[in-house]
Figure 1 (cartoon, rainbow, N blue to C red):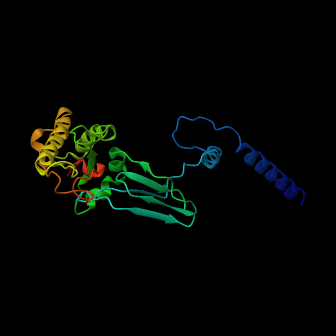
Figure 2: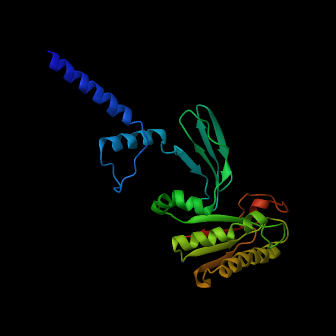
Amino acid sequence: MRSVYQCRIVLFIWLIVFTTGCGGPHRQTESSFPSSSQEKADVIIRLIREPAPARPQHQMVLLPNADGETGQMIIKTAAGSQTIDRAYLSTRIDSPEAAPNPPSEMSLEEIQRIFGAALSAMPDSAIHILLYFNQSSSELIPESGALIPQIVTLIAKRKATDISVWGHTDRVGSTDSNLKLSQARANTVSRLLMTQGVPAENLDIQFFGETLPHVPTADGVSEPRNRRVEVVVR
């Protein structure tokens, strides 16, 4: 009986020593993998102490359709909602209990990185980008001018050789002058793309004057969303 009792004491002490050692610092070894129970325990503890960062549960972005129309997207959870009605605005929901985050602009590179595979699987996998202009001018507004390098990067990543550049105006001015202005706007964007390496033979340049408004208006109404060029990358 005494020897059995002594064995149990020795076993109990060995367990205490072993489990106490598990909390010690991790020993470096030449192997990439744990080579003992001690190291395995350290690895488990380190993983528990340094969990992988959580990723958003859902991320959404509003893109123009094949006709260049944007529409509206309403995202609701039990904690709140967000309404998105402008192209390239995005939001995310971090958890089922959280409200959608405030909308923010998503770059074309980020859209391609996150949604590229899904967009390519769609029947019309083209990406539509709207660029806006100053009133009665072929000069891009600064926000749209900043998108040109992103469009060039997108074209390169998709290895696109079919790019449409369509010019439009609002209904301020005569029909003839607006047709010429829409041509000038399309040419402005085409030159910017070619300057940054897009081959001219890959560009399909068209212009429509005031005949295809993004937002229908009466004659003579100034509408910034109609003063645009639409770039379609296929």
